[in-house]
Image (cartoon, rainbow over all chains, first blue to last red; front, side):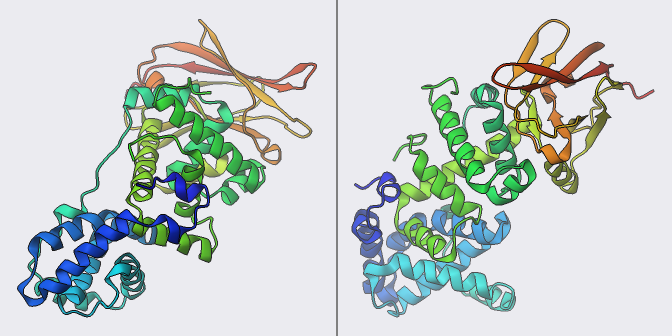
Length: 204
Length: 188
């Protein structure tokens, strides 16, 4: 199975996609083949796979938990409708299809409030459990220790970055640093914090 | 992939995506990848969990945080309750921390023109802690410190001092000393 590091090390994305895409495509084919009869198990598994990713996309674009949760429901309903109706012609590219749907729905979000309710009214599948992400919150005491152990600059940059999602350019202007310098400090700080949290550093 | 697996390059890329630092083509590529790669999607979720945990940690911090005046304004705009103290070099101030306060903010005013490195020495009367190489904007003529919230919450009557030093490879010079005469909160 490929790992996250494939992406970071510049492996071409098309070459890196294998297992997740294959699994999603297999589920999409099952739903397509079941058509009107429905394949509840495949649909539930499909939702389980894609709901966390749609939620992340929604959080990024809409910066709201509630709006992201709505987006998860809307995208999954539309995609499943298309699959049930046999309207997805390339199941092997289902991930791109889901992403395209999510992008379009974000654009449409302000225009089509009524359409969303009509969709919800006509859909019986319970999509809510799939939208609950797994949490990996670090131990609170360990995090306090690791933040305290960071060099002052790294701690300052991480705190101000994380507190309200402040980009490097903005932070650099406020700290009298270049954007690149902030990114370097942020990168080091995040690495030191990670290392400390897993116990391999103190944090530097 | 398991939580906390070290991959700092990936973290930086995902963080840049999250903070809208990538151009449209790069962001689109990352989005495509996140939709097809559960490992990277999980890594981003984990990064956001860490972000949320750092936010929470600041609210009950056992560490002092040096921030910018702009960050303090953002805290205010977010509706947080701040108790702010402005001190000039050599100055002192009676101070406290109310149960309803979210943060105390110490604005240490100091001329910083030409200064390359600033160190902070925090003296609580029993021990001294030195924080080297503070982040600062020389144009602001201020070092802004959020003292540890967890410490302030339980602090009795005490005098704490902060000293700022301009540091060069061969010497250091005191820029200012700031005295905080703390009393526990009293509503009367």
